[in-house]
Amino acid sequence: MINNQRFTPRITGLGAYLPEKILSNSDLEAMVETTDDWIVSRTGMKERRIAHAEEFTSDMGAKAALIALEKAGVLATDVDLIICATLTPDYTFPSTAALLQKELGAINAAAFDVQAACSGFIYGLSIAKAYVTSGIYKNILLVASEKLSSIVNYKDRNTCVLFGDGACAALIANEGPGLVVGETSLGADGEQASLLMLPAGGARHPASLETVEKEMHFIFMDGKETFKHAVRRMEAAAKEVLEKSGLKEAEISWLIPHQANIRIIDAMAKRFSVPDERVYKTVHKYGNTSASSIGIALFDLMNEGVVNKGEHLLLVAFGAGLTWGATILTATEE
Ligand code: ACO
Image (cartoon, rainbow, N blue to C red):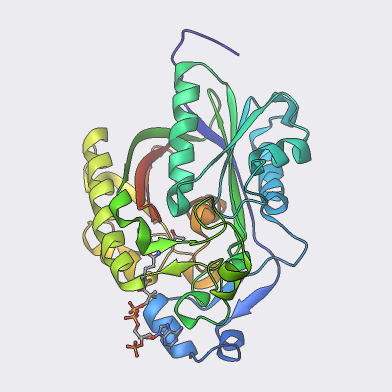
């Protein structure tokens, strides 16, 4: 641990893990009354990944984390803190971050979970940034992992076509080449909490025969209302973070929005002067993987080798809570 200094946080290693099993639109056609046409035209999704029965949020997170650590050249024992962003933790407690700490052998790391739904990666990044900037910690492992298939009702066509499983990880350090974590802008609106939730399983409605019979352990979403908030809030968060950074829209080389729906992404992108080919999309192949969606997209984009030194990336998220957030990453010159 180091103190009383200011450091520039940067992502020095990224990782991602997607389960092998593919759930295609034609698979869904056999499960609920839907069509490939409806799903593609209303959401842009063609397939999504589903974890196997014995594969959990911590397992997927650990696989993504190992890749991120290797890329960063950091040993698990050198990690100071593990933050796990998830709304599908292995257990309500202990935290999934603690399970990851054990799984990775990160014996010197503190560990906690962040619950900001689909905005979890951006919220987690902002926490990591604050710890690294202040000099409290040097190496932070941010993991975002979701087994959404464990809370999706595969009899409800309104939601079951939308979600997929997967994980991402980022090592945030105080030195080394990578993506510098710049300004961040976060927000929330608890007034709209009921738009998108898991009604039971918490202290308000603990699991009971009644909650199971009423199917309260599955995702509930008012899709139409959520859609409207998503576009507005992501646009506002993105504009706020640009202003804070002193950057113009034209200076953004890549826009990486939360991958909830191609129509939300397109509506968002239209409000910015970022050309379509610079708006990174994975929604067609992974669906909405909640907290992990932006990190998985970032991992895929960086692996394409198309991000040049000095370029700015704008990440913008939106999710249950409601929560939203945006951040700027800049590819270092080193
Ligand atoms: N197949 C066929 N028809 C369907 C399906 C389906 N899979 N799902 C819904 N429909 C029907 C509805 O029943 C409705 O029929 P009706 O008019 O007879 O009642 C009709 O299609 C239209 O439904 P809408 O809800 O109006 O469809 P919409 O165009 O709004 O698309 C969607 C629905 C895809 C859910 C969209 O609203 C959306 O993407 N919302 C936002 C999701 C989001 O951003 N989530 C945020 C983060 S998630 C998180 O934090 C966990």
